Length: 236
Image 1 (cartoon, helix red, strand yellow):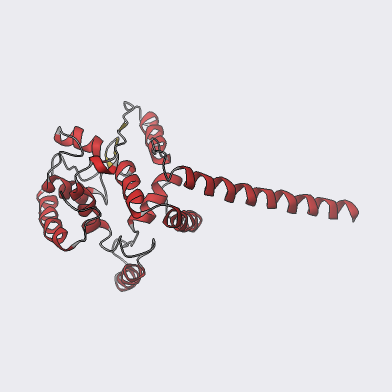
Image 2 (cartoon, helix red, strand yellow; image 1 turned 30 degrees about the horizontal axis):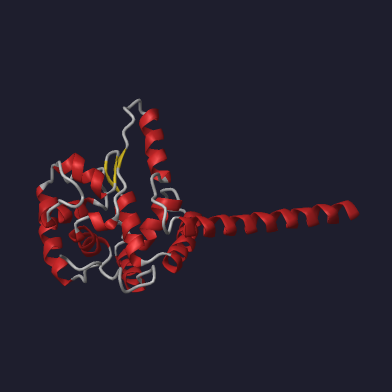
């Protein structure tokens, strides 16, 4: 009986230290990344592993650039396309979540709609792995709350635009600007920003360098909607 109690006590102590270590390390990493550029993400390594498994050439194009060096229209375009209330919410758009849930209930046989905000996508891209499990979703909520508390909206957008997958082996706006348009993040046109933004739901399927008629139609819609989105930073 005494040995059993000792084992339970050791187990509880171990669990306690694991929990403490988890919270300490994650909070510290979020604080550090408030200023330090994010040069690599879990998804980048996962894609490299997939390329190697498929005997493909290892491809990773990623250039970190400060948000001040990006065309401000890029942030406006992704807000219009992905998260129109980004500047208003605190990480979660509950109205969009409710609307997505209602659509999924009414149309259970169709593709499920999500309502992930830019903050949630940033948390997933930087700290987690792709997937739809409840465990991963729980971690996503946790990291979303953390970055909303510690980072500014400008920093969240900066990390998002630098880390998001924008093509096969392409991550971030500067890399896609170079490989798809032969320019830089700062020299992208408003139309190019909108075109990049509309590929983000599935950037490995939709190619901003060779847009289909479907993408061009969505691009025109986003260009119209950008007029009604409050810009993250004033246009010069």
